[in-house]
Image (tube, rainbow over all chains, first blue to last red):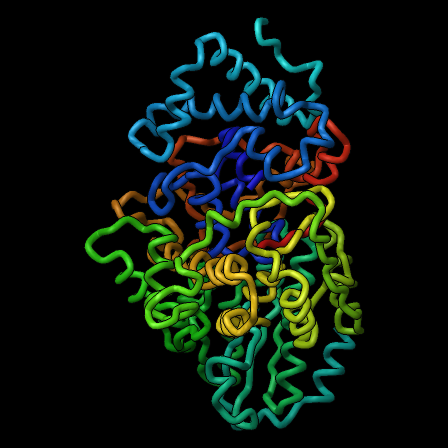
Length: 147
Length: 407
């Protein structure tokens, strides 16, 4: 869930992610990994057989795991995953507008100021660039909210 | 291969006059199909190790070892019950490797392969009637059941399919009513895990000469593949599969339901049974694990949660894939792009070495590339093990060096 979530939030090609799961998981074969990743994991097939994109910010990960305890980001304050989450809905607002299953996050997005949306986008671009270069994400490098 | 061949020869019976089956790498059972019904003394099986398949993608070394070791142990187990075994090794697609086998042994039967990629590979032989496809008997639901679950143009939804199948099969039902009062306890499968109850440790498997030989083969011939082997996690014999399933029943299932979605740094797998790899190879049969779990005395949220995975989710995935030809033809008529060759998910970029797979026939493409949200970015190297997070504990968890299993 975490791996698909991050890939979806970062707009990773569903095919690339499916190919990765296919080689990395001992139980993956085309009939199971393609629907699971192209459809369920990334919403790459739209609402063909799932109702909504399965994405989350830091709050869900923090609730369901102890991962945040070993991380130098805080799920409540500066976790970039939450910014990625809002940047995802901002980016895909038009494509998801008619989907009743995401009405709630879209309503929250509507209340998000332009300034915060712009910051979400900056964090997204920062995460993307760092990861593409194979670099670590560190709180002190995160774009500032009022930068 | 010396040891395996010697063991096989020691068990071989006279192959003359047999009816031959081709047994793909993921159909390793004699509890269904012709192997379950016909006299072993009249049957022969053809098993194939294709280096073309192994090198088609940068498969994790553990996965290669798992498939090969299971295939070889299955071949030995069948030879021991009197089935003749024809073992083929080569570096071309399965169709090319099987063609001369048909010349030698006559037409082969095969249960319809689960993987579309293998079905496509075999097509020319099927067209020439050199291979006959017989039904795959190990799915729990039929194409007709899938269609009837969505009669009247209803949208494909896992939950609706699962509820339909529960009612049709009567599994976890009593007098037409679901056990526990409702069909799905999904909403009760969402508890975080804070250390209690303690998470079980997966059983370790004994290492034997057959496995050792496979490990040596993977380490020498597939050294450029990612990952490191964990020999003691290599469940490859029928006994290993039984041990894995007994462990899952006694150590995992009771708590599986509530913690199904939980994640922890202290346990990679929590109460997940981890049987999916063996089930997808058919070392454990879906029908059997469902029957065993129905017969167990378990909290309903765990019992139902497990059944939902095998009877609902797993079957649903397979049907959706089948109905769309692996998403190459979608119900609205759109045809997503598909590359001509299999992707490496950025492995070559990460490893700095080009990935050299062997030539594939033009009919075998690299899979459909749907992207409803227009997502097109390449997979970052973090997925292959490059440290990415704000802490070292996080980076080691995202490492691609260990093969993982779900369910």
